[in-house]
Amino acid sequence: MYYIFLLITHVFWHSLLCLWSKRIVMSEKLYLTLLFFLYTGLLPLSYIFPIRSIRVGKYIISGVPYLNLLFQFSEIFIKQEYATDTVDPKHIIDAGANIGVATIYFAYYYPNSTITSIEPDPEIFAILKNNIEANHLSDRVTLVNVALGRTKGHVTLYHNGLPGRTTMSIVHEREKSVSEFNVPMDTLSAYIPSEIDILKIDIEGAEHEVFDELTQSYTIDRIKSIVMEYHHIMPLGKSNQSLGYFLEGLEKAGFVYNIDSFHSPLFPHRTQDILIGASKM
Image 1: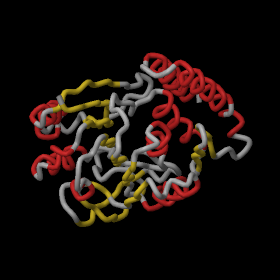
Image 2: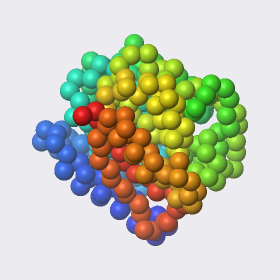
Image 3: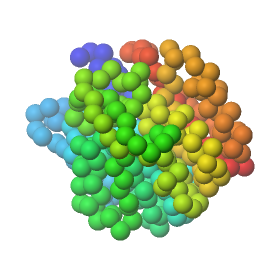
């Protein structure tokens, strides 16, 4: 429990520092900081009372255990992992949408946008659907219940069985699973018929398959900016599944990028999550 407390403290304070380093208006920083302390303060109570939702502006997000919800809120709204310099984007894809926190983030900051949200896990997809409908976003958000990969078909999805899980993957090395099941799979290109202003992608280790297909189909030319979590599976050692290979592919497609790595020393893992922000020159 002591180490879990240290991890939570480390992650949350890191997120708050990231918020204050972002170029957003002061009133928004103050508002999000207030929410941050309010929701963090409710964490001990969540073990006594069933707190299962948070509000950001007019949007309510719910459906998973409070700690999981707080982590996602901290990463996406406080740390601002998916902030870009894109002005008034019209078309956004949220690949690996989970329960919809990033989708609602984009709806909150870009009210003129339409969003395609893609999530493979049927249980999590049901929560995503409820959050979109509860916030009256069905006219702006298209929901797709598939895994993303190199081809169309079916694939095994591995997960740890925890409610609100965020590490489910089609890559077995990514997730030490206690459960697995088949889900439909499709290419990301199938959902990019025209220009996309922002592609957010967090697909737990399947990035190489998806981006190889985007490159081979030339669909990557339709994407203006990318914000993503790259999952560096360190023990594999495959040159065509390395971070260097992936970044080289972005460069060849005409993207410039920056990267940020956050890895807790408290719990060394087999994988390291790296944030990549990329845009066309």
